[in-house]
Image 1 (tube, chains in turn brown, yellow):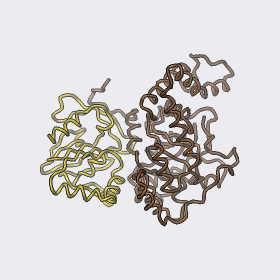
Image 2 (spheres, rainbow over the protein chains, first blue to last red):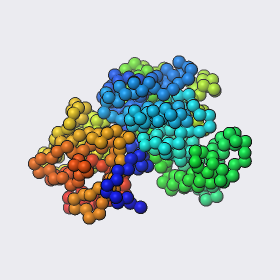
Image 3 (cartoon, each protein chain N blue to C red):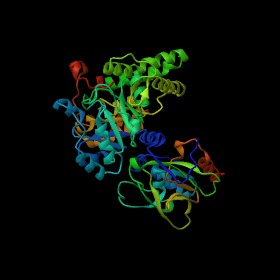
Image 4 (cartoon, rainbow over the protein chains, first blue to last red):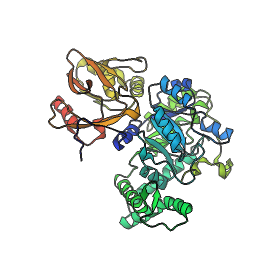
Length: 333
Length: 150
């Protein structure tokens, strides 16, 4: 199968997309809202930045519909720093994604932090040259996003809260289920495949009011039997390798070096920090401390050292105090 | 030692801060360290870099000048079969926001080029590659590096 034509350049292949995500492993990706913050993030050792108009904590406070950031801000950030620049699109908003691809951002986050655009489907990420990262709460969400072409996963957590509890919940949900796959035989995996494919079936049922059979197209050009076959293959691979087949980061509520390190010890490949840095007292010092904590996540003396004298972390929100309909993690299908 | 891919800015910063940078320089002075550098690692091996110099600290090991993100951003990243000096069959190389070696001098030898852009070079105990052999299962590059040592 090896391509031997030495004249052809192949862009946006699975290897190129997943490879990009692998280069971020062991690193910290920081939310920034302007060029100045981007410079601080890069100077503190961020492996990439996420360009936004508002950090999640402000999106939460601001209310209303949250959309893709102003391309001008994204471009200013791209011109300022040399590490990769990522940006967010609304769930299912493939035109925002096309616009970001034309700007040349390095990775798109199809994110529940923004207001979802499509009540039925996520973006068909295979149609893009640039790679996508998506959030997940459990293995089912992760597998669907990977099937749709995501090159990287992250926990959803509960963004903008400075509260780590949901990120840990989601990380544990994913890893426990992966470990449970070990005991599953073919029939078990097939049953799980049906369960994980149900979201596409339900959407198409709602849209057409028809019974879904194997030959029914359920998402873009894919028929139900193909969806099942490919999701089964992904599950089989996960069972064998005992991890997600893409890089898996932690996100949603990380506020301290210890938060970052606990996610790493629970099996994350790296960390996204949203509001946690620039909503704290001393962003630069905290950013550096979190980078150190991720690099030395299993060295308690380093975690203790870098946690000293950081000033106040962002205040944070108790999850129970958030009205259910305002939970960002419930967005996505 | 292998310095793999990643962000050269980030790797360089962590190398420096952790003290590993000085340890490597010491071994280089003693001439006792073999290094293979891929992508970001290739950048760090160079003596010179085009453009922004203040955000990355080089190891100054090889007589070459590198240019970061020479093909562009992630959108312009690609896979390509390439010819490598000494390899009988083409090699499928993955380029991710890859640097190129803009020029070489002294004892630095070119091993591969695409469109006149140098993408692999070797000098003494060092091997520099602008692509990522760590992302594919073809082990010929790793074997080549091991043969340099034994």
